[in-house]
Image (cartoon, rainbow, N blue to C red; front, side):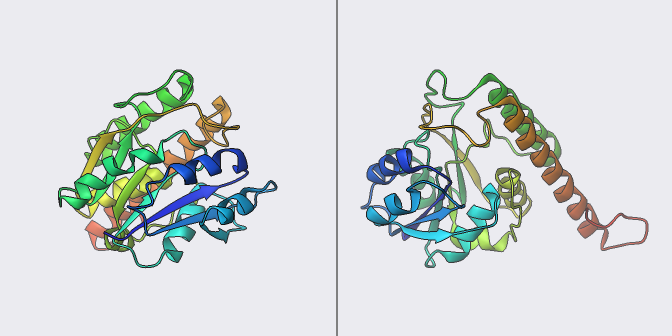
Length: 241
């Protein structure tokens, strides 16, 4: 399989070198680092270690992932990996195995089923994540334990979903739309470690609440679109949000 790894990054110069060093390069065809306007040496670190750097001035985690997805070199599989070294790139074979064997189209690395180190995920992030997966189960019928950022998917399948979420609802949109489109979604346990540097999202209660609100808004929008699609646009059915 041709595997492209997309790493959204913002001021991750201390962690990114370790992330890139630990990637199993025998399995990876290209590494794309999408820089969201770093003011440190993130871009230089990425280029020095062989990654292709794309500068994305538009802020948003989902925007960085979408930009990377639009710029990869037509791989078979795309992997999304954070640049803070909380997930371990060396565990990439765990995510690729269900894809290589033909058992899955989308693989999510579950931090809650794996070896989660003390302090790696704050209590507020754990609670927010459990609420999000419970709502995904209730609203979409998706059976997952986590909506973690370490994930791999078939490139052609992702393109077929029409993903467009630009902020923190990105993890929800990929799974929800994937499920609605009939993708086979598999979960594998991964380890999770305290990140290097300060978290931009789930490191604080405020950040976790903000991420949760974006996820809820994304769920509501997808449900509205699906209801409108199934109705055939009939009068009396609200159009998508």
